[in-house]
Length: 290
Image: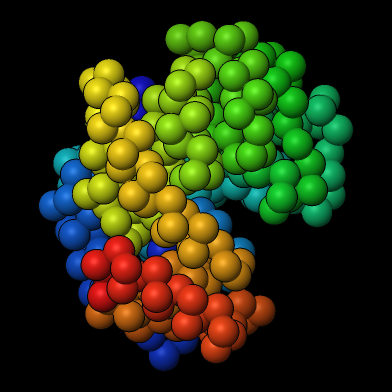
C-alpha cells in the first residue's frame, strides 16, 4: 500500500513554536522533488517533545497541505497503548492515509505485549497501520515471529524495519510476503533491504535530498539495479553525516544551512558540537547541497 521514498519530515520551530509556514514550504518542496509520502510526527519530527495539541496540529497541517497528492502517514505511537489509540483516532479524523506506530519505549514489553499492543490499536481504529521497529531508540526488538503474528491482523499493512539487520528484514519479507510491506528504517540499508523484498524507505535523508532518494528507490523498483547502486554510493556520505549526532540534530542543522528552516531544536536536543558541525558542512558542500 505504501511504497517508494517517504520522508520522515522534520518539524520546524521558530521561537519555541511550530513554524507552520516553513513546514508547508518543506512539504511543497518534497512533493516537487518526487517524494512518495509524508510522515509527520515521527522521531525525526521530534514527536517526543510535541504537546498533544502540537502533535494534532502538525498532522492536520500535513493532511491539509498535501491535499491527497501523496499519502500522509502520521506518527501516532506511544509507550501507552491507550494514548497510541487516541493519537491514531485523531490521525484518522484528520484525514491521514495511515499511521506509523513505534514499538513502546522505556517500559520494554515482551513479544506478547507487543502483539497485544498493536492488535488493540488495529482493532480500535480502522486506518492502515505501519509497525515501526527501532530497538536502538526503544530498548526492545520486535522479532520476525511477532511481526508474522501481526501481519494477518486487519489494518496492519506494513513495517518500518529499523533494527539495522538486513537478515531480520529478510525473515519478515519471507514469512509475511504480500501481506506486509517492508520499508527500510535506515537510509543506508534501503538498497540492501529492497534486495530482500523491501518496497522503499521512510527516510531522514529525503529531508535534504528528496529527488535523489526518490530516484534510488524508483530505479530499484524498475530493476535498474546499476543505477540504484550508483545513487546509493553517491548518497552514502550523507547517510553517515546525518547521524554524526542524534537524529534529527544533523538534518535540522543541514536544512538550516540550506536556508529551508530555522534549525531550532527542543531540549534535551541541542545544537551540534563545532567539530561534528564542521564535518557535516564538508559533506554538504561535497554533495552540492550548500
